[in-house]
Structures are given as structure tokens and as C-alpha cells.
Image (cartoon, rainbow, N blue to C red; front, side, top):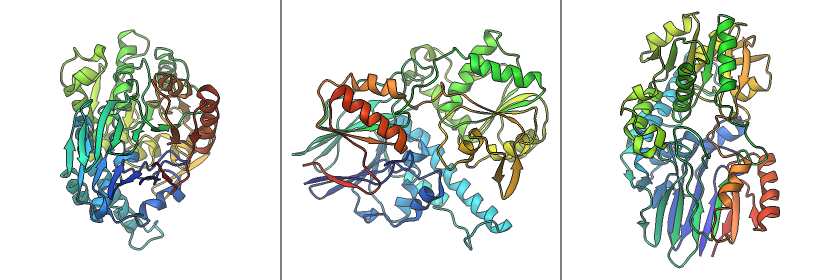
Length: 459
């Protein structure tokens, strides 16, 4: 008997977790943290549906928090098994997990100090020590090589083109079905990362649907980004870009460097105010053999991404000085949905300033400050303060690292044999339901969109 339980990213884009139970073995694919709306974040505190110590192994598709950020919580609650991921995912996890713990611990300290939490005392979901314990359980494994991770359970990683080290995972169960966990699907023809490879044959497929109801803006060779930068510089303002510290920062720097070289934007100081992003840049440079061919000849250090006046902000003191600096500049800082991190200080300084622009270049989940801002909120609350929004708010969809509707369908057309069942995950209800209809019409495959907590029997 084989069952699959959807413990996250079901009718939502966050908290990816899928539990496979097969002949007494339990394997969890992805261990994502819920982010965004409060109703979702509260799920992080729920009792896990099975005892974490009963899980034999965890398999990770890539290193974004909504796919790995819950792992230290599992470890704190007793999970002692091995964690399987590509080497690139393992590298980035060394940055993401301790940083997530530090942010949570600092947020709890701030809430307790200033009394703006409803909980007394406010607590982090897990500690930095939990994060390092989780990292000690990682077992890296490369693309394209089968590996038995538990009795009767074999996995194989395939390049997904979404993030350094990102993969979709083929799981072969002895005497059971082949399950393809799509993770987050990357895009075609984008800079920095290679295209996703065609999927292997599988009986069951899990496919993301983040942009299942729309196509991204056509690639304009950076014209929209150039327009935002030029207009802001002309006003004497700063461009503040909340960006995911791993993945998005690299593409932003690629484009800014490209536009500078083509003399399509003025040369201004470019700051990366995220220690994690700076370390991620080094990992990207060191793993240039996993990047797009046009990135591979670059030197194996962060200069491969450096603009003319490029500076990494390292210390909290440097970050505070940058926040106070009113000079024209481009500031790239995390987090990408403006839910935490150093970017909040830059937003507090820039949102009231009519000269400045806050530019979003990635998906903004419902319930986040980023979504509120692009939806036109006149004020946002940051660190317990109500901040007026007078700055220009802009969004560029063409830089998304998630495949859009057309790219998802393009990828599915490379399937050599139709699956017996396809499950849509990692999407909000509107895009998910639209994609469900489109796939059924175009392919005739059986498609389901499971809800949170649903369990299905696979054999």
C-alpha cells in the first residue's frame, strides 16, 4: 500500500511538504515553512501529522525557505534521518537555514522588547542550533544518478532550472508507482540558469501551478528595468529592490551589469545588503559549471556578477549607514516578499519618500507586505509602526524564476508517456484551477488539485 499526503503547498504557494508512505517506510519530500497569510503561518506551529522521528528520510528539491525552512523544526521535534539534496542545494541550505533561525530569534527578541506580539513570551519556530543540527544530517547527491535512500525507495535528481541546485525528483518505489515531484519549475531561455530538462516517465506527477493562469511579460532585454532605474535617478531617488537572497539577486545583477555595459542606464552605486546573498553569489560563481553556458567562462568569484560601483554591505552598522544615506543608488536587499530582514529598514526609509521607487521582481504571496504594496496599500506596518506609502511602487514579472502557464505546458509536452495521475500543487486556487482545466483540455490527463491534509492511495 502506497499513500501520498499533501502537507503543504496544497491550494497555496507555500509550505511544500509531501509525505510518501510505502511498505512501512516514510519519506518526506520537501520540508517547507509556511509564509504569507497568518492562517498559513500558524500551520508551522501545528503538531506534525506523524511523529518526526518516524520519518526515514527527507528529500529536498531546492533551497528556498518554502521548501526547506521547516526542516530544523522537524529536527527539533525528533527527526534523525538523512536529508538528501543536490550539492548546490546543500550549499545554499548552509546559508538559508541558520539565517532563517537568526531572523526568527531576532524578531522574537524585538517583539518581547517592544511588546507588539500577542504571545508572551514570543518564541522563534526554531533556534540557530536546530538549524545547524539539521545541516549535519545532509547527504548531497548529484544529478542523474539513482540512489536508494530507504528500503525499496530510490530517487533521482533532475535539473529544474529554478535555482542553483534545484531539481525535480523521480521516486521509484519497489512494487509501487514512479512518482515525479516537480518542485518549482524553472524557465526557458533565462540568464544565469540552464533550462529545465525534460521529465522522465512517471506514473504520478506533482506539478507546480504558481502562474497557472497567466504568461509572464515578454522578455524585453531589460527595458522595463532600465526605465525604472532611469526615472528614479532623474528624481534623485533610490531604487529599493526586495529580492530573494538566493536566485533573484544574481539575475538582477546580471541585468544591471548588462544595461550599464550597453549604456542604457546611468552608472550609480549598487548595494547588496544581505550577507546571505553575498555568500550565495560566491556559491553561484564557484558552481559556474551548473549555470548557463554564457556564465561559465566567468571568473570563479563574485566579480562575475559585479557592476561598476558594486558594494556588498556586511555589518549591521554598514546597513544602518546605508539606510540613512539619501544618495542616488540601487539597493538590493532581502527578503523578497518584504516579510523580514534588512530590507524592512530600507522600506521604512524609502516608502515615505516620493523620489524613491520600491521595485518588486518576484511573486508576492497573499498576506505579505509585498502583496499589500503592489495592491496599492496606502500604509504598511513595519516593526509595529504604520509607514505611509508615498514612494513609487513598481513590479516586473518577466524576472520570475517560476515557469508561467505556457512554460509549464511546454515542459509537459516533453513527457514521453502520459502519467496515470497528475496533481497540481504550489498554487493559489485561481491559477491552479485554470491550469487544471487547460491541462485536461490539452492533454486529456486526469488532474486533481488536492487540499491541505488530503491523502490519496497510489497503489
